[in-house]
Length: 102
Image 1 (cartoon, rainbow, N blue to C red):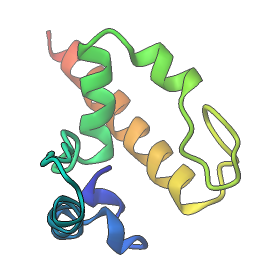
Image 2: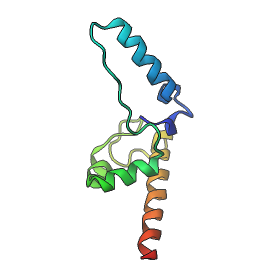
Image 3: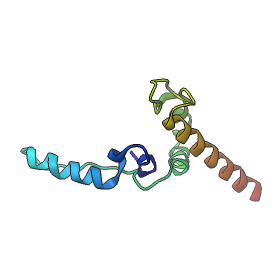
């Protein structure tokens, strides 16, 4: 979950998640915290993090972003697939530029 997705999805905003956390805690017998470690990262930063953690290939091939249920690269047409692709392209371009600068 990332605020980068909030343009079409108000439930991706940090304020929504914090509000949801409060509401759930009021209704539960135990307190807990909803963690959103990707909240303040854009899609290219998420790709970079996956690369740094050594799971880039896994994220490329084994995750689902597509609204149409197509894994990996997805359908390529829905908003989630477009955000994913744009983020990946931005990260790969930045990575190539950094490699060329060395």
